[in-house]
Length: 159
Image (cartoon, rainbow, N blue to C red; front, side):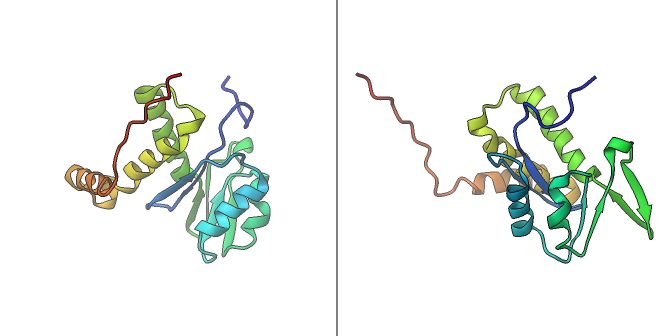
């Protein structure tokens, strides 16, 4: 059986707009104060917030238009209320893509560079075909992102 829970895992908070974009964060820890700050600073209060049953979202969830949860521990992954789907499939899908990429392409990611990998996968997700971007569009945007930046090599001091 796969390990569950936060033990031994790196903290990642990703906010996904259903059918839209993602924004990911790598905080030092995913405690209530940190997650609350990230959510407050990045989500409009008129939003219907959909989360799992984690206690990290209980207090901050009250600040939004609605806070609806799915209870994964009870094998609930989606439900429908008033014709609306309530689920966390969008963020689960993003993490699936991220995890497959990390295992299949990079195989290892040091804690020091995790934010860079997240930025790459956020860029890919935010510029996908479903949002109207082609491979050419994505390539042009990636190249444009390096304008005005220099890559330098720093040699370690030799004693």
